[in-house]
Image (cartoon, rainbow, N blue to C red):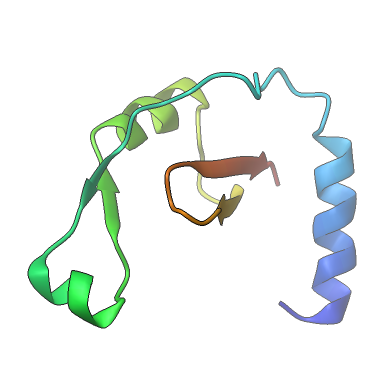
Length: 83
């Protein structure tokens, strides 16, 4: 992300922090891992619970999702930044 876009993202994030997104809500995501992915550290795909999350948060084209996964990867924190 270009430096000028980082400031814009931060401004958008501050504007939308007051949204009714419950940070304590948990969603169960199925993670699809193939043998090739497990041995080559490629991208993992999430399913099932992700679709519930998408519908409940009314995600739209243009929304920015800031995802963080801590080690060990048990949880994925997702912050929605509305455009």
